[in-house]
Length: 277
Image 1 (cartoon, rainbow, N blue to C red):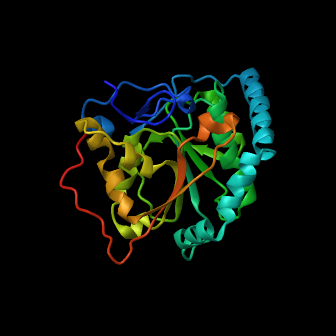
Image 2 (cartoon, rainbow, N blue to C red):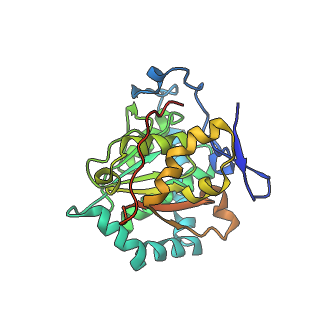
Image 3 (cartoon, rainbow, N blue to C red):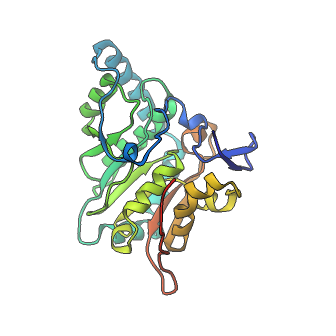
């Protein structure tokens, strides 16, 4: 069953799992039925053969996407925001005494089949080229990735994770989680795994707008359960929405924001007795 929250967009709905155009190519596994299935598990692609011809075509497609993004006004504005004093100061706070953020990409989707995932990957690759505070090794995971896609990602200097972490990684060091258009439960899992300020303060998160979750959430019990920790985190979240004026990049980046976490004088993290979904 899909649960929805109200949306002001043209389609009239805003889904917690966000199966928008930006989610194309992200085929879902059967929904886990028990807590044991939610834990980290070794992962292997169903597509085990590396096809050199497919890989060559994918390389061409990615080169086109990289050039298109790099020369776009969208990317110019994207960089200006990251370099602005307000956002760059937050990045410095996340870095602390470290010099680089480890970038982790969850839910990238099929870069071979769809343009939106290629645009998202292009932004990550271009960020690594532009900023010395982005770590050299980008870690990537999505259960839809084929062996051909994984091999190509590794040629770009990425590491494809062999374990499905369910986004439950603890931020033991400064980490940039790159998660545009992931399901709400993955953001919730990430927050739950780091629900203490000394961990959250080490996180920079690029993904769905937390403010949108807070503004649009319905009274549906499943929606509330999936978004409760996201909404609770708002008291310690500084959010910076990105601009997607061009239709070319709307599908890949609409309703996306940068999120940073720090507590003010009157803010603290609420306690949760249970996070069962």
